[in-house]
Image 1 (cartoon, helix red, strand yellow):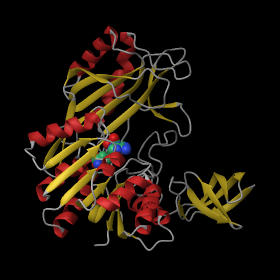
Image 2 (cartoon, rainbow, N blue to C red):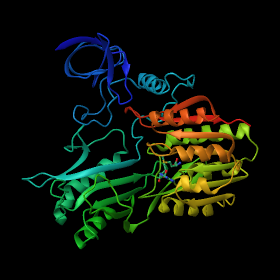
Image 3 (tube, rainbow, N blue to C red):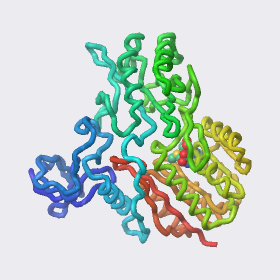
Image 4 (cartoon, protein in one colour):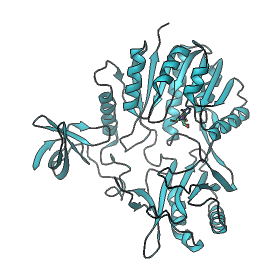
Length: 445
Ligand SMILES: C[S@@+](CC[C@H](N)C(=O)[O-])C[C@H]1O[C@@H](n2cnc3c(N)ncnc32)[C@H](O)[C@@H]1O
């Protein structure tokens, strides 16, 4: 069946939404205000799936995609929509997540940079069957077929050069790309952490082996010598049949084990296995926003920074806090946070390596003025939220990259006495359907 549809808005995963005969229809690669012809390929009780056949009238918000690979690579799925309108669509997505509540969603704060903004690159590596050429790039949508990307406009140009070097030179060292089906071949991924501050790059070769052999070491040295701005190179040992990109075992072969990044006048160290926001300039907007909020409402508060990573929030807030306590389960991150605290002479911070829920359970009631929660996409456990409510006197600041788990967790907090005034979205992942949010929750005194 083919239908004429007018696209009304975007779903949280970036699909166009239209209505027909009371059914919701989802269509990929369309823009709100497009009038289209779509073929219905699936009909469920509550929703239908359509495939774009033809655009009958273009939305005024369509623009020419800036990337030559846009038709095959699914990474920047909103790049055919003008940037200002992307932000409006993202605001609507967040509002949809909070439908049925009176929570105000503010306008999205744009990313200061919308090209070359992404400073963490993780390319899967494969090999062609016959000619044994190395392929490196992102997977095509809904598949594990690689789009061999030579140029990616959203990451620093040097990353393309490094990847090209891997493509051309690795075979000369007898290094084979990974074969997922047979779990054979050495090189699984190349991960690059690139510094927006210095332009330095830490390159990690993820290998399907229990240790780096001589070929890998020689190749790594060649790559390290070739680029002045590759300041560190290592291998990550990942010989399991898993979808996880990296294990927690990284061995640095040459150079430094971290890059540096500045946030609000604190210099951070970012290692291979540590979390850091992929868009450092947009991240700085979030840190400034949270810091201004705390500074204008509190005098030397006691702050709990949970899911702390390298304790970016804790260390940035330390100069306006009486005391900061950070908790993070990844040891490599906590170790780097300790180094940064010492180098910046920050003394009023305690850094704990533990599961947040367990740590919260151990501390007593009404201990902190403010608790910052910044969990991974799956959000917090109910127990963590229950404990957070007990040990926080005044406000919880919840930072989230997933509007649906944020909405779930805010529902719990509001049902247990919290009041959410508004949610402030930040565009951290330009040209994609992803969005970062900060919610401030006041607690009864
Ligand atoms: C979204 S990141 C936020 C990091 C940090 N706040 C920042 O802005 O850089 C989430 C962090 O939570 C950590 N994490 C995940 N589950 C955890 C848990 N149950 N307890 C403590 N930390 C956890 C991860 O290792 C990761 O560093």
